[in-house]
Length: 252
Image (tube, rainbow, N blue to C red; front, side):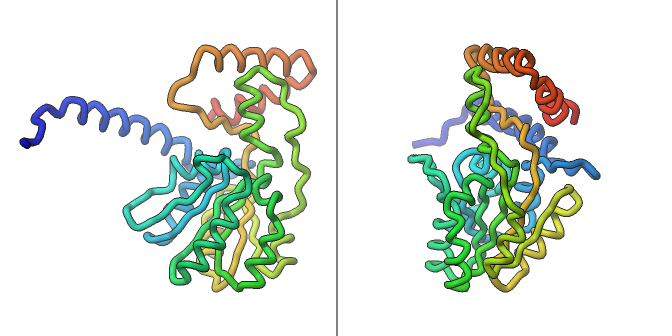
């Protein structure tokens, strides 16, 4: 069967991807001196520094979004996740299994602070088994994807605060290399040091809680829900959150 000669759909799709890719890359640019860090930048730097045949695992929620948008799959890399069931805290145990079954490969786990907290005991498993898994933890002190779903539904978020310890120091107490990035200029050297470390390592990146992981299209119901959320925030005396939301997502 002859190849189809009509490539208009292909050209349109490639141009659409080019524009979408440009927008995503602009959101992942380093902003010197800014704090907290944009999580997109962390994922982009990890993509640049990780091995060409690295095995990645990502927790459900925002880590899955950043992994999908910024980790380049080149035919040799693998990306593991709980993409069907959406089970929280999957990244670390998946990384352990991948490292045990592929001892010669670089294995990197991308977690949120909530996901890591649920199975934090597996840090001891890494130490016990001496597995050189690298953990990148996006710490925004919240169950961020749950908050995003609440915003879209017009619900004033509650019960999503996470009062975390210093996760890098906690990793050190468990026998891992613990590193912490609080500003964008610290992200690259910390991730590079972790990837070069001969053993398990954890990089805790302090990222923005108000980062909106915008979908390709937004429904009318989502717009109405978000408008209702902003109204409730202002009326409840939490108007500073709207200012922070705008500063994080608009004024960039």
